[in-house]
Image (cartoon, rainbow over the protein chains, first blue to last red):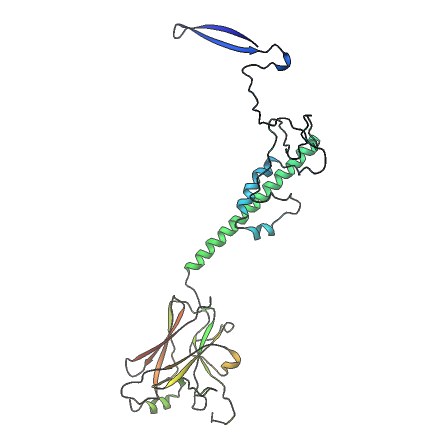
Length: 217
Length: 126
């Protein structure tokens, strides 16, 4: 590898000094192995190009929108599962399971490619790619479905929070008895005793009877 | 009604708390003369209904066993007045209070003195 150094000088009129900076670059003799020093080296762990088996066991494609909404799905499923199920759109793709880590994607390709099912070959291949139009359309559908789900979740959250506020509002109201209560009160000696022979504590009296019984008080 | 052997007389019930009464409020049952048996073991049999919303305090139901559900039973021997014999029926006025704690307090105030008796039971169904 040869290293060529360039010296660049420039006079700064403002500060009146010569500024000299050295720029060095490395050039490899073999064109295939040549890389410039300012080239960002790809870390060895980055699976930039990966080979995929073309069988049908590859998982379904996941768009970034869906991957982002997975967290929303997980957060939303905590408290509003019944409402979610009420408003579930059957045409929308199934949401990512909660707490499921989204699969790692190949980086640097610009296309969302899942790296599961890698066959280990070094050939550059992107199986299961869809035509651009279909890909864009499916992404648009997924994005609109995701937006629709977000809107529905926001509406459901508003309903739930309203219900919570409503409950709090009601709980601050004085409660009312949900039943009416009555007390055994019989009006004569014949009705005064229960079937177990016990007496009723409360007796209905005519005013005359009360006056007579209370005459000695 | 005269006592008839073998005939079970109907149980009458006095409405002390109408359905929907606000907790923390109280009402006085007026327009009805009531007697309280003192100095003798007696029963307070409570009935309730969740479907009778039009009753008013002091209303008498002719057949409680058919129209109402028996909720609880309290057998108690109320202390008599000092100058009255045991088993005497004294005229009282009933003041029913439903507290914020969900208890029903029945205050029975002697009409001719300041003596009061109170029975209390839980009415909140939760």
